[in-house]
Image (cartoon, rainbow over all chains, first blue to last red; front, side, top):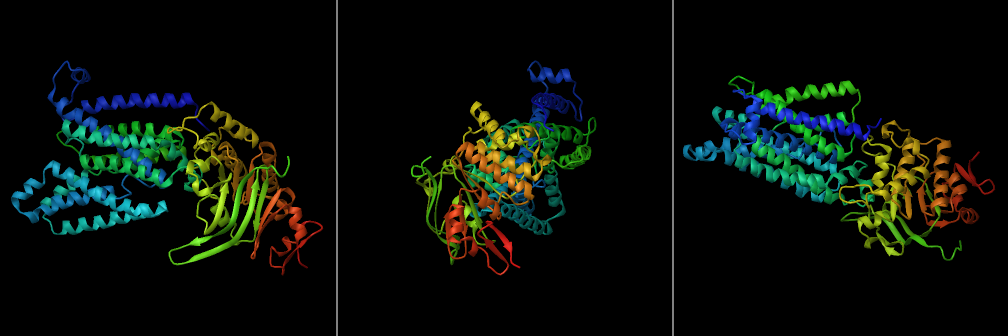
Length: 339
Length: 264
């Protein structure tokens, strides 16, 4: 069965409404509850509210960027590698970032007290994460340029992941418990740590990634036939593969640098979109993954704030706790794996 | 149609095909010469491992020829860009498509890839080409079905329709009759024959159905261990080409009935 165009439209409108609702709910909920009216007045500029303007709003935007960015990069990887288990981090982006951060946090003890405090600032972690993922990525790209078989790139990505994970283990072995705890906390992910200035930088990297993904939509559909067919249709497989990988890296890399290695969203959201829209057509999937990714991230963040309490749970735990049952439920309901 | 003025779509000139690594060169088939003219149904036959697929891969530009040249519409194949080749030559492969979660219409629409803009939006002419392709292959009733709902034979037709939508002079099919029963083998080849008649396209296919190919093709390319010969089925029978096709310890070609028999 194929959905009619009107069905696509009504589902999309429903999702957009849901996105707006979860956006406002996300801003409203937290250790201090804020009424909808107050949020609205603040956003249109009639009222000043420090919490909303400098904490909740950037956090909500970060959630939207992170959720959609991870979802889309997951979709790109699943199509490129023809593998429903692929996610944004299969090319070793998050493990590269982890290594960078591990070197900064865990390695700082080797540099002595004063340097340690300089090193473990927020920006040094962002830079370390970016550098780490960039270096791993560069290695993967150099290999990818020499290889014709896309599957080999997937395995090479996983191998780089193992190498970096091993290096992190070695570093942790020589570090103090305190520093390890700090590193583990980074690994939990954090959406609420960004100032407006950082959100803008995050957004500009993210925007390039989104534009590249949009440019790849047609080619991704053609790649659904397999690489040989795609080539016979005039597609330059190597070039479009390159663009798809770059887009993934910008999206997943920027999220990891600014919000930590957030798991699960990138793997699950494309599946949720495929189940809801019952298609593999990227012209439908890309926008819907964008919306659904944002919604899921906003909901997860709202839950992790534990409304009206002083505690905040790690976002990384919530994404899996909330997301996995959703995917299982969708698959059970449809009884058929759509890929 | 006068035979002299017929346009040559594809021309192989002293072609050597095989594999090349840094150290060595493996020649699979050598000295291949043939012409595919406009409006011909051409069957490529030969025993397993003789190099049919290698030849097709070379013709479609997936791998390079060891030596010799391929001319497409009179122009050197190497001088074409990917997109230009895609507008002259389409393929139907044996490999399964990656996803079956696309509708028949969406699959056929992908045949318009070389013509559409960066978003892949379909215009009036694209829709017209897609509809013609569907009616030529008799699959209009499948338009809104998903590919996982189709049988092998139907999926085969969809892939042929996709190649038709690509609007090329030449369609190359790699073993279009595998996985099909006797009836559907005939119906697939009959479909190709009708397409050649109706559209004036040139269709080249590889197959193990030598009996059927002899009955349906305008021209055949026969690959044997010693040479690659092309010609009309009748001329090839007269030359005795088919008698040398297989080792003659088990089957023989009967010139009268035009088919193979098990040796008693």
